[in-house]
Image (tube, rainbow, N blue to C red):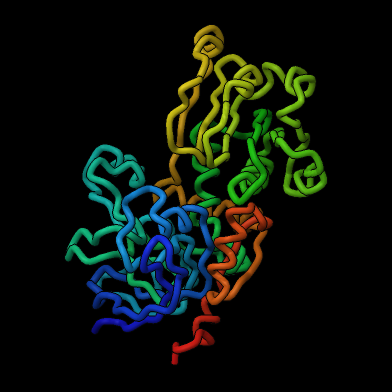
Length: 355
């Protein structure tokens, strides 16, 4: 039995998102059917909907920060039960046989991960559609258990923003005594402050904008450094074991490299593109590195959710109705949100023409 669902979809790069009806696949034996409660709004949703990366296929239902409850499970499902609070992140499948998949790094699948939307199902070749919808059908290996005591709406951004910051923090061994800096206080950056602080690190925020200190300290920062102030930057030279750079556009990373301790790493999680002006001199003489990181594997994402459950960590959100998604996209372009939009998918019932 297929599942007819209502959703909001992009139909072209220039049209506003609007009501869209389609059918989810008939569940396979290892599938979980999930009624979606909340879906976070990621900046990549906007990029994909507007074809900024050149690979959009329409109609497209965005959304990969999904929280819901299990409606039904396939005959082969053993890890989830009807009524359970669960999540779905950026991926819904991978080859599960290559080297990275064998390490639990499905996000780096050599044959390409199957993304939650704007991708192709590995079994039947149908289009994947995301969380701006009533329900979703997902292979159990890519479904995540969400701690019941967490605020469900606030937990939604953990499925992308949360794991995007947790993965490099864990990979580079952040813990008590480590000195960590986060570049940028946005949807990603605010999660970085919370997670690094909960891991026991000494946490600094690099920001170009004065006036964010109170909020940064509330979120976990021990210190705020204005990156455009040469004196403040000189005062933190050689201090950081790890810098996680969340800035999503092209920018100069050279000023941050001198603030790394010997052996330290600057990890890019926001910007995809060229860094033509990178000065390798400080890297060579200080055994410093510039690296990148992309979300996290399924096991690590579950670890992150459990960690957030233990420490009571969720995202700072603004809850919106699905009818307001186009306004939210406009506000995203202006960085006018603290710090993540989350759609209450119950509002889909109120959408014109949804009856």
